[in-house]
Length: 427
View 1 (cartoon, rainbow, N blue to C red):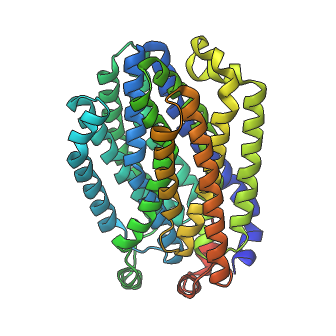
View 2 (cartoon, rainbow, N blue to C red; view 1 turned 60 degrees about the vertical axis):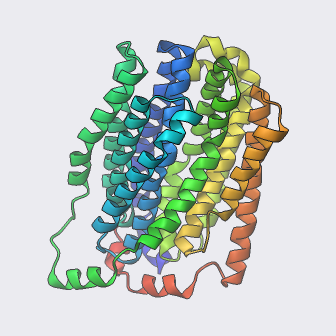
């Protein structure tokens, strides 16, 4: 079914992919610009606080990423199925969890109550946006998805960029980011509005195919594990290294995140195809993301000094020899992200298990085994990324063989109820 509907729309899919790629570039560019400007305008200690808060928000708001993936998979199988209740519940639970964890964050990471409160408020807005983005992704309205991604990115980061350029301190910078983040939400809701009014028949089908909290929990747990393991080295650097070295490590982590998120568009486009049984989507996505990683690691090896100067300024150029290792860590995690999405789309049980094991291994290496130096944490991160990729790949292959090709009968039945007209008009 997927092949017959996909081939006539290759040009439209290419245009959709281009628009999502541009939106992802804007998102990643703004995300990288914040720590880059922080390295130039903040003192080292304040830079470390900013980088730590950005990491915490990324980890906590990955609940929104899981919500987006679960909604996208569900809407790909059941067009028009309702998601509002699950979105509201997921956002509320995430906010309460951050409030409950606030005392621990303040003590463990030496953050003030004001900083933690701002991080919690910023996270709430990002998670809420995940529901709307998931609807657009699952419906394959990729041009609107690109617009929504751009609006959310501007909301999350533009305020902080302006504040840093104007010479604000870290508190004012985070406050500006919170204000612009909430200002973006009404615009995003308008972009995600339905293309047409629902009929009585649509309402009956939607009621029968309501997204369940457990589906969001499964996707959210996997996405959380992915982000925790990919950001954990930055957290350990904050805990175990002196302020000057942890600030330098934060600059290196910009390269890791660049290699991790550069091929993001491939996974975004592949997820709805995986949800309706496209057997080639996983192979193609892995091949393209892997090739992108090879190019990025090679480029960082040839121009590591330039990469560090762009990421943090001339003061960090002497770290050029470390650039390929940060890039390799991100490239490996990009492959893991593809595999995690494939597991979620296939309805695999416990897709996050290998990632939590990798996180535990990183904690053991960083705290008990490796030297508490810049290089010690960097090598621990590289080894953990390689382990996470191998274990996730092996567990995915085993699950595919056990399921007779990677698809359970339940998703297959859902896919047959998908109206062909929807599958034939991506973008």
